[in-house]
Image 1 (cartoon, helix red, strand yellow):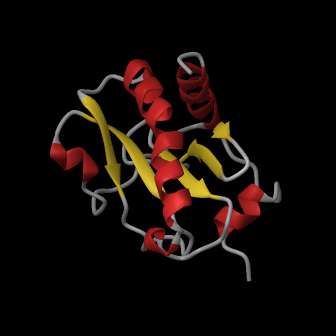
Image 2: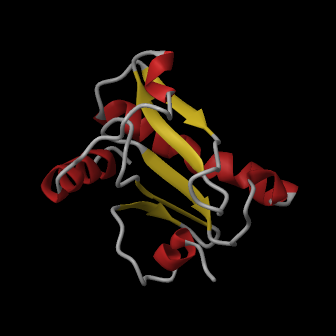
Length: 130
């Protein structure tokens, strides 16, 4: 059975898309730690990030780099933290999270409830800086 992320890639489930190329897709996390929390996923469905071949693993960071800069410019933060947890969805993914402190990367904290209008505003703010 395809993961929820594979279903997003296939267009079966909508997302707040930030960027896409042949190998990767980036979209806003609908259960963010903070506004602007973005997920970067390979389109290839693999459970763990380290299962990616070296070429894709390297390209994933190259793909994520301009996104992190755009998120940092769009959201009030000190920097964009990157985290690989991988417990939530069995599909390799990288979290890009605007942070003010290390605690902002605490995945045990309650997630935000963000309205569709706020999600669209965050999406546009990030897109305008790409």
